Length: 278
Image (tube, rainbow, N blue to C red):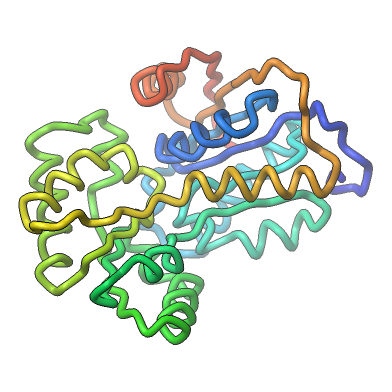
């Protein structure tokens, strides 16, 4: 249903949102699992990064962007940003109780199941690590599994993705500076707690290989988010099964930057429109 309680058609688009390009790592899983769905992607680049903002600021931006996507006719929302999910998904659901809303959370439970040493490292933004939602999730999973979580706020890492520096020496050094201490403290499994980080997975794997003689599992929840979205849409009769699967982008930053990011990270060309603010 729409926020006013009217039934939305299954052909309506799905809105996906992040502070920048990171949510594209979730979008690619959604496109794979739901190829007939039309998608709207919003990059709130003018207000990025979210990782250094307080929860009130993040919540205000999240509510503004999700309201914009709903105004474009979105039948469902994916908050494809760990920081925004942690700070604001409760508020978004309270404002739009009839709308399917899926967020992203660090994959602590699957990581706990894989860890042999019972120590898991979590790479996330500083805001995610400091959030009440993450702290509660960490405490709950730790109590249930007996696993110790080492959470590291990775300042600057999402920025490297935004700049397109996926393989640069500077990015490699930054990744190494965050991964190495976690492994030295005994972590044998890593969680990617920011949707930007899957695009840095080759560098993270390289850092692990240099430190460990054994494979280090790396958990990315993008696929799980897409599967949850599919389940929710099916339950509400909102799956679009015959569409062409179009994609359109919006950004509070540069349209050219978002279009280039889609092309570079996903190999997709899509129309993008810059707006003053959401």
